[in-house]
Image (cartoon, rainbow, N blue to C red; front, side, top):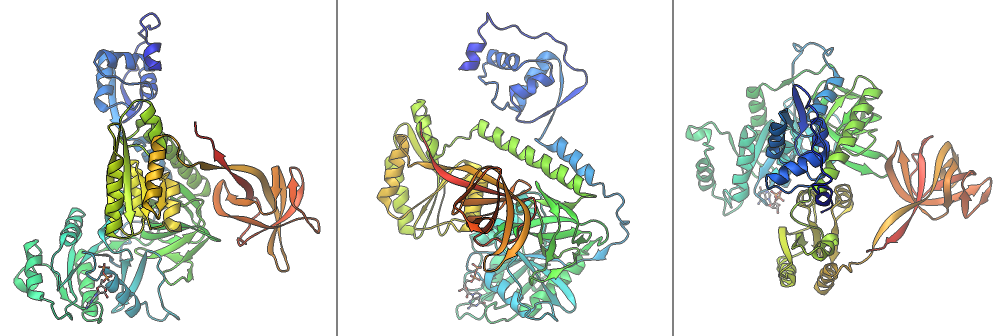
Length: 612
Ligand code: GDP
């Protein structure tokens, strides 16, 4: 309404300044405030014009393509609309300038990257585990691979890389982010169950990605296995087995009994050969992030898959909005290696922040470039996030529902429900439905049995939903993802508590939220070891007060790399309760030992946020 008042005829003087000549590049989804100045106009000009066309917009709302085009036409400007960040990203990419990379004729065969897909319970995980334990790369002591998101096995002297997350959710999530990290899909179909809905889905995903499919008919050891019937069902999906004159490779196997695994691996090598998978192993590395998380003690840890080039320790890496000098490279057996070539899955330590699965990583010519690219992406992500908020999706979160009800608008509460069993899922759904009123509706974005997963977080973030967990709890990784995506998770064990909360939310009486208030800040100046306590950081308190027992965050280059509590706090040889600004002190932390000079130790309190 403010904008409308500002536009009373008496105050409004339309701008008549000449528009810039030539095409004007504007990002899709810009607001009038951003868009108008590019055409030498004010936001009010745009708002006013669109109002005359019968379209109500405010200065900060993002505009539709047609609205911008209409206005451009009106003022006689030539418009080029680009996707957010497109222009900038191209400029950023140019900074990597890998034209000096070794010439492209240096192509070498690389291992195929395989993803296992299929219906639930058809044996994907069993197969992945069997391959992992039966065929680890020879000559390694211990030899057991770690779950880092992918692993490599050796067959006939050749390597095969397996993506360690079965199912197509991860596959399409990566693909949605532009990361084509699969060369071959193994479609597992249980011979006692046949082609099921997720089998068909998996086929669609593989086809959409134009990736060859090898069919593994699993569980042939089972009494009720019917291989022929399963084969016909597979053939109906236009995957005609070679034995029937088609070109689909089919392997009959039992993952559990270890039957047919060797043949499967051999067939994968055949497909790899036909596909002529090559990459240039020289030059700076490039690839994708498969998984990433914050590790207590090691900071951000990213599992990456090298696409081309060779990744080396010390390389300045950029992954999405994170950057850092590669401090260590670990292979899938947890061993430190100096470098990693094409198709190798490795964990990388040393990034400043946690990148997202599917982010591309590149090696920059130098640290400065790496930092510039990462910083500018981070800034853009923040901008886009803000704009996303301004655009407000159809649904609202629990915490905001009262505001909307008060504003006299119909509020739709988007919820994603996860429950321990079917019965409770139904019960929760039913009670939420009963709470619906004329002005408050519930929309179920997704309902499922099982724990809260990162996929749920992604979905909730995309739909602005609140996650309700009934008798299920998110694990650390999921909680971190939720925090990063600003998704609210509420968990309950009794239905009436849940109902009570929702009723309270509708009345604006939701349980208090807490915010973190920074109470002190100390800079690490030097490090020494003390008997019993381990690493002690000689610190200088830059501001506030640092107290023993406070909760602390540990920041390096502005990124939180650890959270915990202060263990001991000393001035000279004495234990003290607190140290104030301007003084030096010795701090040891509960379990994080990897301190560095220049790190910041921030102490904070939790304070209740007053609700209006
Ligand atoms: P996923 O959901 O596709 O990952 O399936 P799982 O690997 O978890 O397997 C589901 C169930 O089928 C488990 O109980 C496995 O032990 C069982 N299973 C997997 N492969 C075989 C097999 O070849 N034969 C038999 N009899 N059972 C199998």
